[in-house]
Length: 572
Figure 1 (spheres, rainbow, N blue to C red):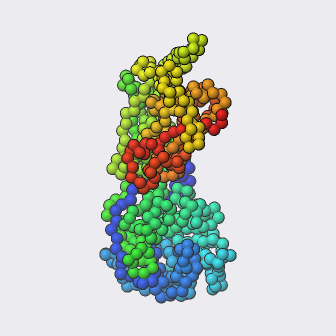
Figure 2: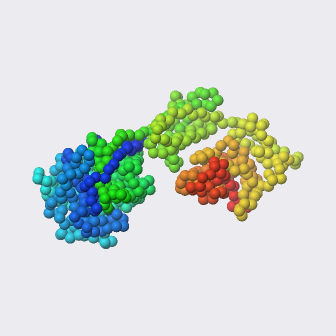
Figure 3: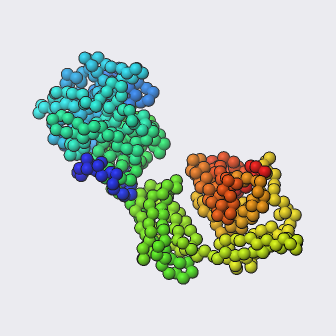
């Protein structure tokens, strides 16, 4: 196994994108389970298993790591032999002085099996210790394992405290790092995954939070390290419900957690995942319905391989008219929530490549002086990991001056419309670009409309493609007209409001509509509108104009009505 200590020190300097894709599993409830609670399997050498059970003692002890609400039963440790079908046979209670009175579970042995780490209730001088909130916190202990199996020289680890929990130890394959769960000060959520170096002579380094790529504001616990993969349980919103088992690559900086899927996970709590990767078998615990007791141990087989997925987006930039390569273009890649991930300035070959994680959709942005900026959505599917693109840039059109005769001999206005082609001017009446009083209808002469008690400019709405925020060429005429109205009425201040349909999450839609509003404001400023006279606001899906709310089936045309814009006068 790679030295995980080196990995943590290099964490800041590497730049890589990858994500694990979960394997497929088959599972079964094994016969060792009882009507009580059985959970927390650990390997102890070849074909030997240790687990926790409450089958001999129904006493309740109040601890917040097993459940946020319920009192957890008292557990003792049992050992048994594993057969080829995943059953644990010949079980017996581990009899040591400490096991007859106190609550033990979650065991992890060093690679040489000479030492064991385990979770136990906080005790002092033979008595349980409760904190100020009447919780009994957990601590991690270490013991020497004698040749006859006895555990001796039991010591509490030096970073344990009475005021917080330390639990669920898991030793790395090289025996140099201990992973564990804690809610110590500085945690991101209710409980986090931590790691600490195991030094010589029974000493330890300073515990380190593994970071926000694993931990969240929710519960993360029950870590298990298999090579460079960390398995753990979390009740974050992406779970099926309760605690779910996730995995993450420890040797990839940007690796994001992957849910193990609906065989291992359920709407209930699923936790204490362990695996023998050579045999591709293992165990996990769950309190899902139709079990035998409060918690049951499940045996699983890994039916397919775990894939370390990389999504590659590559391509080249060409001129739309000449098909020639365009060196010097800037290519940016954004995440689905519009966070800039990387930027490439293409060289003489005009090529680019991005290595990305298989964890969602992305957006490309390509820009070059004298060319129109373009955008491309990259939608990830599990069957497509390589995207090879040819992106075409269109040159900006030269500025066109349009003369408007307003029927007053002395009033001849010249309005500069940027990025409109001369052919477009010839094909479309000038009234579509500026208000010509000789040709527009009576309705079109009305600059202001009253809608729901608000004064809004009488302009065509600016519609957006699903999941995009850039301005299309069809919207330039409307923006040119808006610019002229604002500049000719120096006392008005305009709020540009952008709205989305109800698809996607509320937070995403608020973010997308804010980006759309900002883009329109920037364009109007570019056309000469003073910045203090135009404001942008994203409303998301908060003001839908029809029935198309979450869960309501609608046509694309109905959704389009909600992806609208309004120029609202907020000061006149």
